[in-house]
Image (cartoon, rainbow, N blue to C red; front, side, top):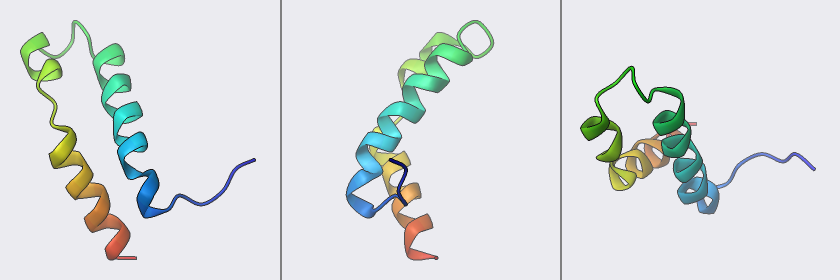
Length: 53
């Protein structure tokens, strides 16, 4: 079943987003950047996006 995301989904969305970046961009973006992607920062961005809708 596909449903619209809700605020409580954001931490899981961010986890998938970061893992995706780390896999897809490995070798294209320096490893130290990929390993230091901030869950907290991305959560804040997603939350701000939800509030703007």
